[in-house]
Amino acid sequence: MMLPDTLEAITIARPPMLAPLSLSLQPGTLTGVIGPNGAGKTTLLKALAGLSQGPGRVLLDGQPLVPHPRRLAWLPASREAIWPMTAATLVALGLGPAAAPDPAAVLAALNACDAAGLADRPVNQLSTGERARVLLARALVARPAWLLLDEPIANLDPGHRLDVMALLAAEAARGAGVVLALHDLDLAARCERLLLMDGGQLVADGPPDAVLTPDLLACVFGVARGHHGWQRT
Amino acid sequence: MTLRLALLCLVLALASLAIGPVDLVAIHARDPELARTLFLELRLPRTGLALAIGAGLGGAGAATQALLRNPLASPDVLGPSTGAALGAVLAGYFLGAGVIGMALGGVGGALAALALLLALAGSGAGSPQLILAGVAVATLLGVAINLALSLAPSPFALYDLMTWLMGSLADRTLPQLLLAAPLIGLGLVLLIRSAPALDALALGEEVAQSLGIATASLNRRTIMAVALATGAGVAVAGSIGFIGLVVPHLVRPLTGHRPGAAILPAALAGAALLTAADIAVRLLPVDLKLGVLTALIGAPFFLWLILRGR
Image (tube, rainbow over all chains, first blue to last red; front, side, top):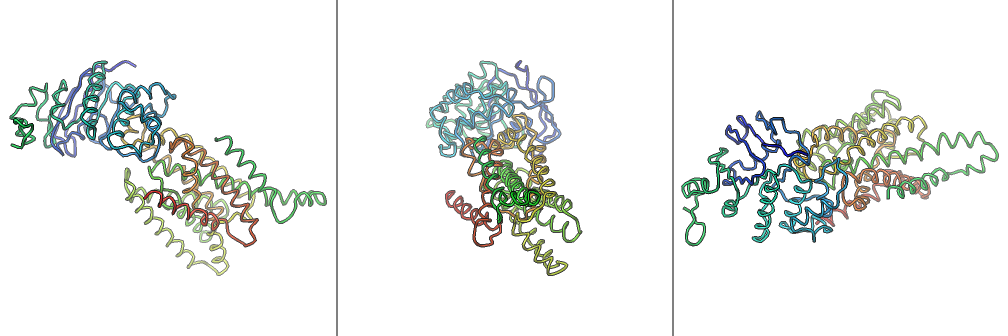
């Protein structure tokens, strides 16, 4: 499949939380979405994934978005797993309902997320962080052109956070458009582009050093970097 | 595994055809015509209905659990079976409809119960809301059945209704089999065709949408098919509980816990289980109704599920 040139989300008066905004994202870029709780990060990601019901529209290559496993993957923040299927079975579902079985792709995705050792374990018996890695592998397995990930590194230990950020940077380097919501401001600095949300509005959009300024961080998050790490302002 | 379950169904069906109060082979030697009539009018409808209704309940149970993403969901817990019973009672005893009208009433009742459930719980509702809404719907419809019983036109009608509600396959006729089996079969075919999409639904509704599944139409199709697969059976045989709840749990481990892939094996296992239960009912020295026997087996299993989930 050809990789699309742009994922263009033109959002007009999007209810219920977002202010009118228009946004264009390029493939091959690692884009971070940051903002306080309730700022509208998930709402923005869902809108980009074409999952919102509203007057806005999402265009992929100038065309209305038609969901397909190879086109776009959506990873929700929820880590719940209802059925006690094995990690490998769950990841295989990410290939889509019409796809032929592809054990090699499943293993590769699990490997990429350092979850190959979990392949035969029932997902409901995994820890939340282990399950988070399996669910990320599910999002990656079809090698989609676009990855829209809601807090993929929440619940992960520091080592796996760095691994996943490196993995997502590699996905962007192979040409995928990667958009992730995250709360870790230090890791957010590793993104090429940051979207700062507050109160349902996009308040800043640019490279990390233009967005993670002391003024904006104090104003939006109420934090500042001190001698002993982050502090309340 | 599917093949083995199908073979089990075949063996049980042959056993069911062979078992009865009279020896058909002996009768055949004396009066071939009588043996033929007994076979076609009594043995065949009974066996065919056990297979069809068991398959419908098992498959619909697996599909309901997959659709609602809840292992404790089933047509009889959430109301469609009660709705089918009410629909059949209303059609049969109060509108004077015949066998066909009762079957259609059953399908309509199951459909109405499912629509009411989804309207109450809202689409994308979590387990607690769905179970609450299902209990409310099932209770409401149960009360409506009691109301219908108390308004029964005559004591004989009341007795008929009560006996029918207990669930039985005794003295069913060939036309009932020929009517119910295609409706159940159609429902099952629709459900099996939706199996891959229902598997993907295990990842959640939003993820399923992002994989290209039109979840709203999947919901509608599955509900229609569940109503077909359960409604016609309940309308012919009365309430046969717990098959739809229990059977999917028995077969899901064999499909790697993929909820959609379990629909076909659950249908086959449901057919086998109901046929076996119907054989047991005929062999037992007491006159136990089929629906009572399945509940006696199913209820402890349901309790065990709850205990295991703690």
